[in-house]
Length: 150
Image (cartoon, rainbow, N blue to C red; front, side, top):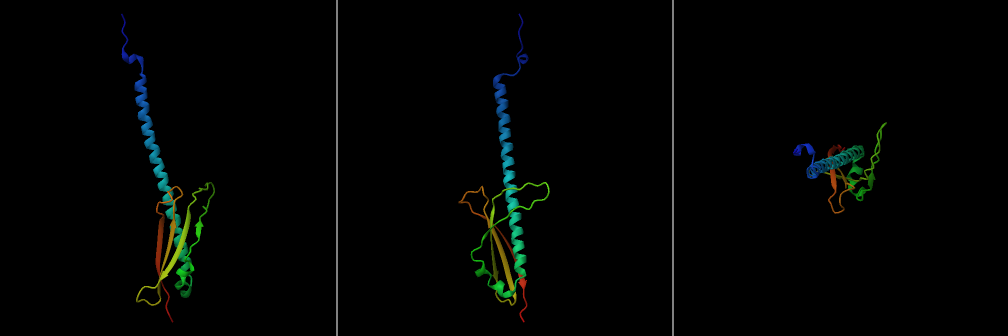
């Protein structure tokens, strides 16, 4: 009478199902991590773009005369949205992010100062995949400009 050992038969169906379940759970965790990293990269890219827009607008404002700067809040009371198109170099692909940036600039004369203006540029946006009720994001860049009075 020959008896077969259990180890010679290979894997049972239950062993295969348990191992497959463990592999699937691991893959779900991996994909979740990749998705979170992708969202983080998109948010970081939007922050960099908003900061560049704010700094560019601030540099343009610094070239304006004092009278124009002092009337700034009234001039930009209703800011127009800006959609940024990506600048491509050879071999890159365009990313359709769908992010719309709203730029708002203001100027303030600090109390007790003469010839000094504080310029602030705020860039606000909302990521396309965020819910409509979610708060938007904002970057603010500020500088002081001295314009001597004659």
